[in-house]
Length: 231
Image (tube, rainbow, N blue to C red):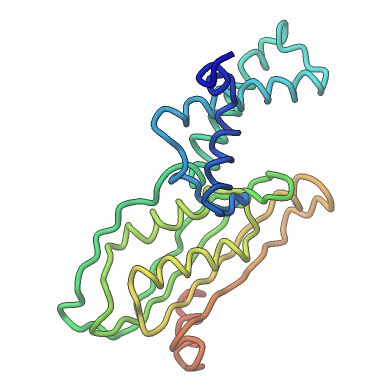
């Protein structure tokens, strides 16, 4: 068998994993691996996940050949994971146009609540909540459009992860793009790994925050931000 034939028979997930390892990069559940996926390979990932998801259904003793409700479930689940809820792993980040702070804005700006949807990396159960972003710009801060905050949040959240790490990833990206004097992010979310399974508590939520720069040093600024989002 020729090297080309061997390569053709190698699962696309193995090829991508080998590229990532060769570059000495991580591929944790909440990492973006778009740089290592070549044109046309995302569709092959979809096909591979479909086959393996069918194996899961078979192991659950579900007769997908005769049950009309589950006949196409393997493909639907694969498309949901690859093209929707975990899309933030497989595609590059949204294009973000940055503008100079021509008016020298230096007052607190808050964006939110932004509705976000994610999934916990422990059970792949939904995490659904809201995010508020507070930015204290300076004359050197880059300004981005309001809708871009929502697009960045969606890209970060569309991965399996835990809430604490997701908020830090989001803060790191906004900090890098805008370079503000202060950045604050608060996320409040319901975790279906608690509501749908386990303790089955439908009412509890998780709230966490990241405070940087002026928000960390100035308690009055932090208090103003928190009081405004609670309105």
